[in-house]
Image (spheres, helix red, strand yellow):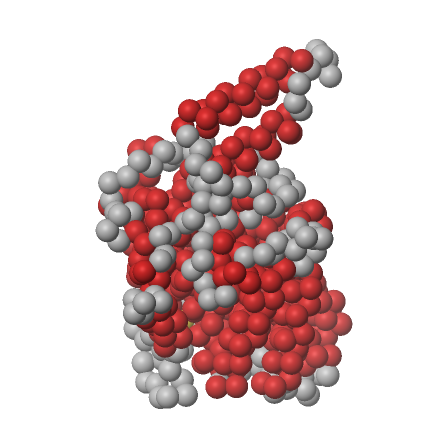
Length: 531
């Protein structure tokens, strides 16, 4: 008789076989740890710190509080639509696999190609933006420690950034079991840090810096020159970037136990908890940040949240708290490298990336795709070089991590309902709410993708342009050129996800599922009463 754990593992392997892939990873991630990777990448407090400069000038307190609430609702709709797909087909390829299986045969290869490249560059951009945010936070700590006498140069920040990326690559080359156990630690630190700020910041803030409820919840300060309505929409980049990259749970689905249930609930619960805790953090900040918003944005510390902490906790208290902010941000980066390397591994498994034969290799000792880990690290460092082109160029990486992923998220959701297909829902299913939730999700992502291509202010120049559209457009243009390239292009050989096992018939798959269910029932009835 099999144990229930072994039966679940066989069920996971059988479902993966139905999707056309053999089991190559060790399934070491429990459902809590699957949730942990999504929640740790969200990061909350350090993520809010990294992108607070988007919300403060685009509406101030009102955008921080109500912009966060509105965006969280829309992001939850995106997450629920993705969770349905992830429950039906939990594979590391995720988004481009779903696109290919749900689209019309006339366009499925091209759409899967576009989604695969958007998802790959989006996850790598997320690595770059998270680790760049961590480097800036390290430099902010140095500035606070020097009584704000130190101001980091781009070269110094880039040096710290490279060190962080390389250290994450080393960590993510470890075995799956080690990486899985780290996720629980990340969740605990994340939640404790959030609660410390939600409770501790109001208690420590001097009365002179405390704001009234009418100011904290209702003041709208527009510093960038766009109309108030459009400024409010631009403030959505803060929650969109913070509560983002939740497809990370999908990319480790082949390493997850009970993936068809664990993956969708990890996505939905991570977004829901992040939305609530993040809203509470923003409320705490708006009550305690004072009313001089320009001084926060122009602080020599280089981080509005660090300046808020400094004004409330003083130098020593801020350094103590900020060290944990940096630590959690660092943990976010390692989780994101892990997820991005799995997406890259899956895409190279199907031969779509340059040097796929080199990238699609599993290290015999760690049983992890070491080559794709270092590929992600190298591309992330190259993206980080944009910092030498000016602050707006590096800020484009933050927008890129949202816009590229939203393209990758939208297409499979649209394909499910627009094309004729045989989509079979998994354990997580919205039923009659699937269509309205999908419409809300796709509409939101389309609007955000357009909005995030615009510059920070309506009066702009070459130095202050938003280069997101250049970077993303350039990458997608080159990928399509390669797809249609004469003789060697993907149009001549790319056929979407490629099975690496023999074909599994529906009869065989059903037999496996029935055997698994029988074993689970036997295990349950065999448990002595009172145990």
